[in-house]
Image (cartoon, rainbow, N blue to C red; front, side, top):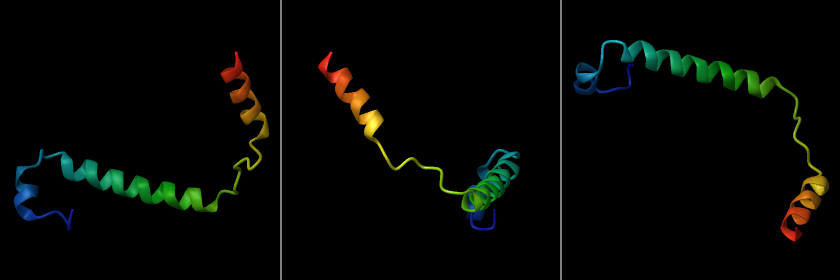
Length: 58
């Protein structure tokens, strides 16, 4: 909460600092997890393109 101006902090719901801190820490945790996972993206879209074209033709 250090980077939120004091005037805004004074008007926040008392639980907001805890919620904001939780969201920030969870985002940081998820970023670390996502950076360590292998790339599982499918780079060949032939099958989905065929299904899309078939849907357009019907």
